[in-house]
Image (cartoon, rainbow, N blue to C red; front, top):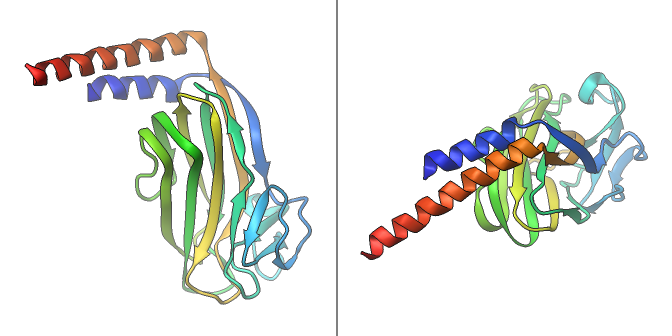
Amino acid sequence: MRILAALAAAAVMAMPASAVTIFSQNFDSVTTGSNVTNVPGFTVAGSVDVVNNNTVGVLCAGLAGRCLDLVGSPNVGSITSDLISFNAGRLITVSFDVSGNQRLTGTDTFNFALNFTSPENIAIVSSSGFQTGYGTTGVVSGFGTYSESINRTRPFLSYVLSFVPTSSGTLSLVFSATGNNDARGPILDNILVDSAVPEPASWLMLIAGFGMVGVAARRRRTSVAA
């Protein structure tokens, strides 16, 4: 059964898809400043700094635009997105870029969480960039909190999380820093959430795969009962 589930997952993640953006924030249109408490699309706790590229020693992703320092001046902050609606059976992909803060030596702790408003049945999960496994299948209220210690000299790294929900719902994204309250935290940029409709042939492959998984599961339960 695990092999069949893996085949179904591989079919979805490899399939071509027509994607639409359902949420995005690259901070380029957000007013720069220290101790910012108003970021469109997000609720801010504590405060954060919004900086222009190559200002006060901070480099943004792509060496252009603006980006967000998760530690304000000097308050440790977090941002929680407005609710993001998604539809059943879509391939939902969340991506963002994070770097260390180039202004000092040392490390900072970066945290990320994806939460569902109501428990959601997740069929498939795939991720990259995360240093430990993140995301899970089954009926879950969220994927928990991912934490990573980031060296301040580390350049931007792209994090990508994809999953398929079996029913429509809403989710929120939480980005935060913990630890050093020194006005210098992880640098966040290019938050994007896409929703994709897989190609018909790939959908058939997925449906067939889950059908086989269901048959295998029923046979296993019957065998155990006997």
